[in-house]
Every structure is written in C-alpha cells, then in structure tokens.
Amino acid sequence: MKRFSKPARIVFAVIFWILVWEIAARAIDNVLLFPSPSAVLVALWGLLKTEQFYRITGTSLWNVLSGILFALLLGGIWATVTHCITLLRDLTVPLMTVVKATPVASFIVLLMIFVGASRVPTLITFLIVLPVVWTNLDEGLRRRDPQLIEVARVYRFSAFKKLRYLTLPSIKPYFISACRTSLGLAWKAGIAAEIIANPRNSIGTMIGSAKQYLNTEEMFAWTLTVILLSLLIESGFVALLNRFERKNVGRRRMTCSK
Image (cartoon, rainbow, N blue to C red; front, side, top):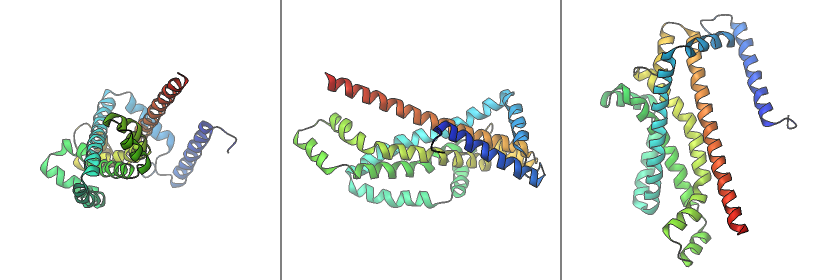
C-alpha cells in the first residue's frame, strides 16, 4: 500500500468500509435496524433537495463552531494568564479535571435548567473543548526552551518579538493537536446536546425525531451529514494551517536571500 498515493489509500479505505457496511446490512436484512448504504444515500439525497436541510445544518454548524471558537479564544487567554500566575494555574488544574471527568449528559441537564434548550449545544461544545485547549496550550508554554528564553532576555526582545519568535513556534504543535482533537469531540458533544435538549431546527433534533418514528434511513442520513461536516471542517482547518505555514516559509526565505 505504500506504493500508492495518500488519496488512493483513503479512497480504498472508504470503499472497503462501505462494502463492509453493505455486507452487514444484507446479513441483518432489516431496514429498520440497519439500512444499506444505498438506502441511506437515497434518504440523504432527498434531504439535500429541501430548504429545511440547509437551515437545520446551518443552525448546528453555528452551535458547534461558535462553541469551538469561544473555547479557543478563552482557552488561549486563560492559558497565558495561568502560565504567568502560578496560583491561578494551581486553581485551574482541578477545575479542568472535573470538567473533563463529568459526564456530558449531566452538563446538558443542568444547562437546560439554567439557560434553556437553544443555548445548550453551544455551551456544551464550549465546555468540552475548553479543557483540551487549555491543557495543550499550558503544556506548550511550559515546554518552551529555557535557552531560547534566556537568549530573548539577553538581547532584550520586545514583547512582540518574544511572541513571534519564541512563544508561537513553541505552542503551535500543541495548538494544532488541541484543534484536531476538539473538532471531533465538539461535534459529538454538540449533537448529543441537541438530541437531549431538543432545540428547534437542529441536526440532533432531527436525529431524535427520526429515531422516534423509526425512520432509520433518515437517522443514518443525518448522522452521515454530521460525519461529512466534521471531516470537511477538519480538512479545511489543516489546509488553512498548511497554507499559512507555506507563506511563512516563503517570507523567511525571501528575508534570508536579501
């Protein structure tokens, strides 16, 4: 398989698992329990032709992405603050541990009581992503090279230069890891919150409704939509980072050639 390109290997893996899905569906032979890939694609195509599909998808996208962006922003700021103030870091560590250990369903029920169903998916996404972001960025800040820190101090780097040449390169791998991990967790938590909280015009609500009425093909179609959206956003995020990195490398080469 190493002789084939990465896209070819991905296509092969997708086709393989679709075939496994088809074989399992034929073995079970009960569309209410486990529909075939073709039945799910037909249901998805039917959804794609409706205006409601895009409205519902847009709502869930906003719920998840707004929670992620808010968590990235606050997690980055708080990681910086706690890195500078040890006491705050000591107080934050057990809090983040509790948030990570608490079942998502418990948070969903509590938030439904205090903030209402419509805000629950965004807040749940935020709560799931925040500990991941803070933990990774905190680790990245703590692992900065002491020798580089000393060089920056000796040459009296400004705060901007320290950020650009020392801090950002040090935390970049941790930030990317946090984002990749968060994207998958955010979709799972956000859709689970929608299923339980049942807000209007959301993918989770449609999944719960399809389950209630034993419309398994539609339930699988909405689930496939979530998977595709998650993969699309993660791929876009990685492509954006790679493009940004190529631009930075090009600028450094131009600077060195001058």
